[in-house]
Image (cartoon, rainbow, N blue to C red):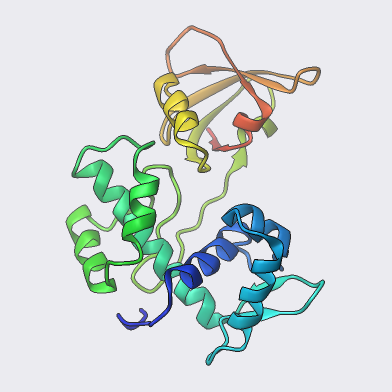
Length: 227
């Protein structure tokens, strides 16, 4: 676990978290991908990456035109911030009764002000959850990430049954739409067809006989496991 006082700004924490979320396997991340993720100018990203690469210890390994990768220390920081974020989301849903589409912005604010000690209190209160309300894995106390093997719903063949494991973060209206439809972690779904012409995925959700059609941009956000 990291010490409670890393003396890192919110902006630095946001950059490190964004790099991890874009490339959790540690592959190089492009400046443009980070800029899109954080909604900032690419030039600003370049400046921050240069700064992070020269800190002691360095938080990223950056080389112009070759992308950026987290150093071991940078990865630790990013995982600690993610742990705090996802535990906060779990607390808001499980204890305070927030809906899953209401928690992201709250957690974005709170993740920077709570300490690792506070996070461990949340983890104990919640029974050490492995996944947050969206199905995202929560790094454990040693900052190890629970394994998850999934495929996006738009890649599942027709006549297959799957269980939803994770819904990649979108905007709140999208999460609300999927939640009202019954597409959330734990839901069982039958894929009826993948239509190549309009790139829609046709499904049944649980025992509901109503056929639903999801566009590719939505279906690729729904991560599932085969049953």
